[in-house]
Length: 294
Image (cartoon, rainbow, N blue to C red; front, side, top):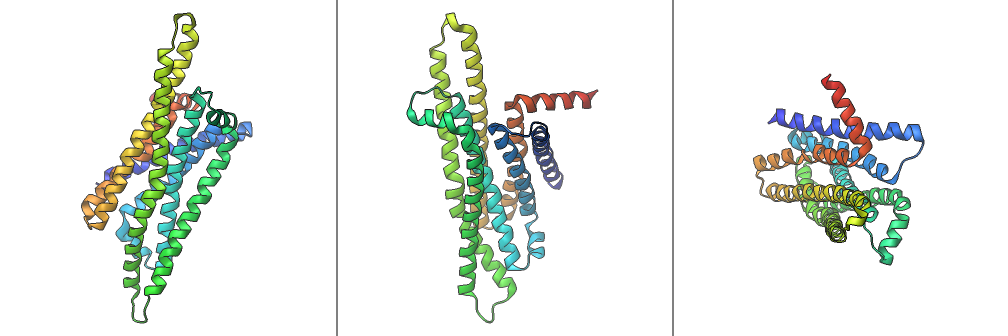
């Protein structure tokens, strides 16, 4: 089991570290980043932190020994919420970006997004971070207030830590609904729009414009493949997170740990999807693999 955990953690850190390093080097060269690259960089960094957080959760017994102080444990849980919350929303915004870029619609709402999406991406990233910190701060503040109200003169530090853990489990339900379900609905909605656009585009293909249509169809297929892959990955992670929360309530430690081990696959798989969907990252990765083989 430990070997599998180490492999998943290593793959997650290596794959997302690759994305982060490549985009940062490109940023240093060109002094600017495209909107899509900003999202990829943010996702790479968030996946690195999420992998570290999930790894700590797997060794939670040791973490509890280290974080015997309730304040430090509260900060740790808050950081977990921030990292996972940001990753969910960044995935949603990446799907929105692909959807807006590929979708051909005369509706004023989509035209507004298409004209402004590149300028909105930095604001969406910053907004996701700010909202994530605010939600995590609200959860931490609520837990802290409840701890203070339940605190008595004869309560021990161990009892206080256990009480905080119970409160954090209740906070997981709130986080699961607000932090996970809303981005999931956005990803699902974008997937439906992209697939519907692809089907509509395929029906309108004509032999006179075959070359142009083939290029447009290829772009549609790539966008649909990327968004659907992210949707399947997101749903899988969402189901495992929900199952993990239920098992945590039932104190089924073995099954709970198994869920977290499988959840570690999310970061390397998402990194693979991002690399395959980006021509620049795909080219650099292929070049590095060919050099490694030779």
